[in-house]
Each structure stands twice: as structure tokens, then as C-alpha cells.
Image 1 (cartoon, helix red, strand yellow):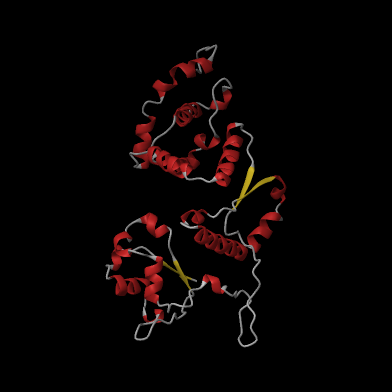
Image 2: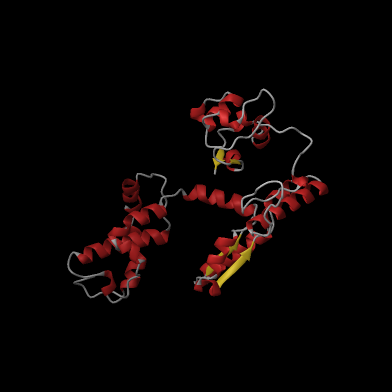
Length: 294
């Protein structure tokens, strides 16, 4: 390559590159400590070209001196960025493919529109800026900052208005109730809900009133009921990450939630673990965080 006059370096590379990179994956396994790491053909070629570049640098030359050769991204040639490459390629391709198939199969029409828009841009090598406005809103402050950016003019905006939780309704009445609640939550995120006002008490500027139709005023609430409702069959699911990721209890820090008579208040529990242990009896070392304090 350096001393021999090769008429077609590209053809030489295309013919022999698979034999030149047969130890690349093994070396990456040793380097990352991840025996599940997988590299596609393009990544293998990039790492192989990077090795050639390293050899050329030792004699004062560079891969860029040979324009017939494929040129990998600079991140593969710059040793300072090796950690970034390792981080971005340290994943189990098989597991990711299975997860993709599961998520893709459950996408609604709006989500598929976003996916197809991004993928078409990648396949056509067009690039682009995409902003996904999710159900629940992004808040007035965030929205204002983004829309004032110069990049906003070229952004492709998608709105996800369909709340996936609506699919869990079993009757028209239940679905309507879920839809109304989802819209209310969305309006909160958009800042469309007016602040609470009452001449008999003082409210903070960001306090809002919860409509009665979203409250169960006929049943006496308690901390026990809150936990049992939010985490049904907790004893059988507390080690299930999917179960836990769909549930959370948000309470104000240092705020007491009164319970039924002869029942303790939330303030009587020093930690979240104490609270859950007292109700479920599950050893705290086995638990993940369930309650968010704000």
C-alpha cells in the first residue's frame, strides 16, 4: 500500500477486508469486558480501517492520504474517543432487536408516523431535527425555550395526542373517563389549567384544583389504600421491573398524609422502605424506589 503501486486500493480492500478484521470482535470483547458485544459489518470495517490508520501514522502518513480507501468517521481514528465508541457499541444486538420488535408491534398510528419520518430521513441521508410533543405536554417553560431557538424553524414537529393508557378501558364509559382524565393531565402540562382560588384559604401560585369527577369522595382514603391501589399484588410483583416502571406515588417532601383512625400517618415513617415493610412485610433490601418526594 505504501511501497507497492496498487492500481485499485478500493477493490483490494473490498476483497480482503473480512480476513483483516477477523480478530477485531475478540479484541473488543477483551477491551470492553463484554462478551455479548456485537459489531455489524460497517463497524468491523471502521475498526479495521482504524488499525490501518494507526500503522500509517507510525511512518508519518495517514489513511486520508489514500482517497481510494473508505474513510471511517473521525471518532474511530481518534484514540481519545475510543471510550465513546465502546460505550455506543456495548449492547446486545439480539436483545435490542427483540425489544424493538415488541415496541414496534405496539406502536399506535402517531408513533409510527414519527418512527417512519426519522427512519426515512436516515435512509435518504437527509438528516433533520425532530421534536416529539408527547402526551402530557412538555410544560410552558420548556416549550417557550425550544420555540425561541433558531433551530425551531427547521424542526419537524410531531404531536402524540393519543394516550396509550386509554387502551386499557373495557367499556365506553371507562374509556371516556380515561380520555377526559388524559386531556386534563395534558392541559396541566400545557399550563392551560387556571390556578386555584378560594377566598377562605391561601394557595401557592402553582396550586390547582382537582375536579370532583377525578376524586372518589365516597371512600375514605388512607396510606394503605393508596399503596394497595397503586401497587396491586405488590408482594408478587415487587421484583418485576416492568410492573414497577409503570407505577409511582408522588408526595410532597415533609408533607403528612392523614390516614384512617388508629392508623399512622406518612410522617410517622422515617423512610420509604419502612412504609412498605410495615404494609407488605417485604425485606427492604429487595425493594426498588417506589415513592418520589418533591
